[in-house]
Image (cartoon, rainbow, N blue to C red; front, side, top):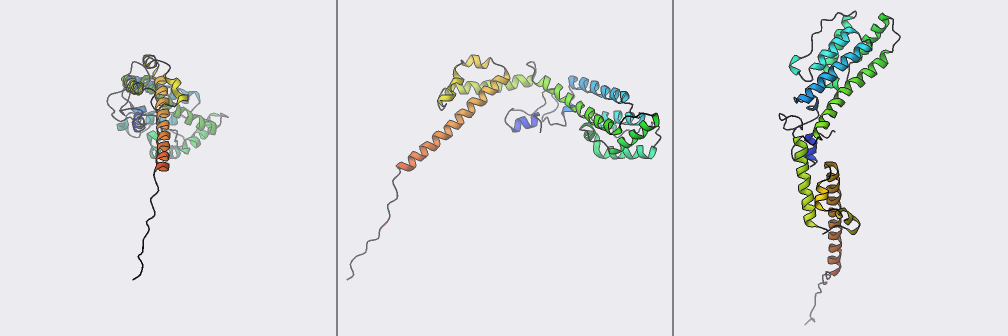
Length: 260
């Protein structure tokens, strides 16, 4: 579970769940991250997509595997392309078609997350044997999965770089929310703040507000938690005192008169 807008809103870390990079996604989830239409996202995807092809070439990947995986990965951002019809010639057409069918079942998102058909490894092993390479197809498959997962990781890093930039609208909105919370805490003062936590108010309000977003979030989280814990503790103490001070219910006694 990643800290995308959808979950940040659920966790009350953000008021809005929209994408910090583009204005076209009102609810950002993990599927949107590699598909974001923002210029920076498109540029990062293109860079990583081409780097993936370069990696396949340097690892002596079978040409038909390289052609299919490169084209199929395009459908992550362009689903209308569908499963590509690769016309690359293969020495093992039946296995190649089986690999394509198996990968199509796993889907393009599955491919991006490292879910690859085992048939690719078999096909690559045959290719290594044909070209006289002693490379391991198992190692090739393992590194292939790593390369695919890295694409998503780089897309996530690009998203976070912009989200946490002081120039982003997301950063500005989040800082505004945190600043409101800090002002509210200073307005309440030391009320309900336990003595061991009052050091948090040594700095002035303006000094705290001028800290980085991360430091402001940390300060607000600490103060809110300490105030809430102390309030619950005081409430329990008051209840205990009330229970002790409350007189016990007198036992009702029934008086009986003398028998006539």
